[in-house]
Image (cartoon, rainbow, N blue to C red; front, side, top):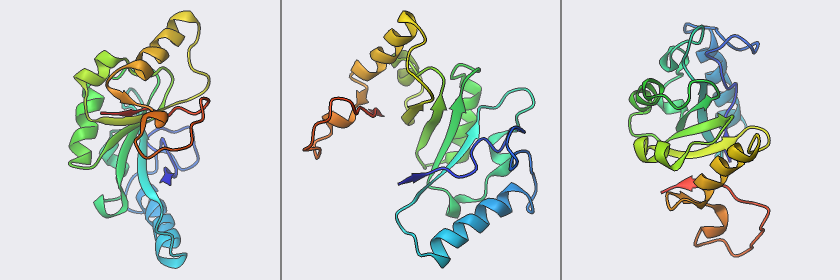
Amino acid sequence: MLWRPYHEMNGDWFWWGKKPGENGYKKLYRMMFDRLVNFHGLNNLIWVYNCNEVKTNVDPYETYYPGDEYVDIVATDVYTEGFNDMNYEQIIELAKNKPIALGEVGTPPTPEIIQKQPRWTWFMNWGEPGGGPSGFQRFRSIYESDLAITYDKLPWVTIKNPKVHYPVFR
């Protein structure tokens, strides 16, 4: 299970956001990790450290990073900065060899973006795809791209549900 607790912590719109330092967000995240993993023995969680894209009044990704031993995937949410190279390079630097993902997007990446930024492993669209004919076409272009693998194309999937399609990038 992909588990992304306390997402967008580098902004100030949630109660857990903008709490820097060792006794701030990092401590909260580690406490949850300890409780779920060590106390409850949950071993089926894939821990996703999920920030908001860096921009004015949003802190850098590494400010709240709890440590490699607490994170499996590093993700960001993209709504206004348009998959810019600065955010992409910063998340790659923080993740090192860990997968990176788009935790939430307002508009999905295009095939051209995925070709230019090939380390993205998956995205989750927030809300309805599209936003009019041109938005729907953009959504459809990534799903139909050779760069994406949708759930129904995975080799181990035996149950076909035409309403369920989750893209993963090759």
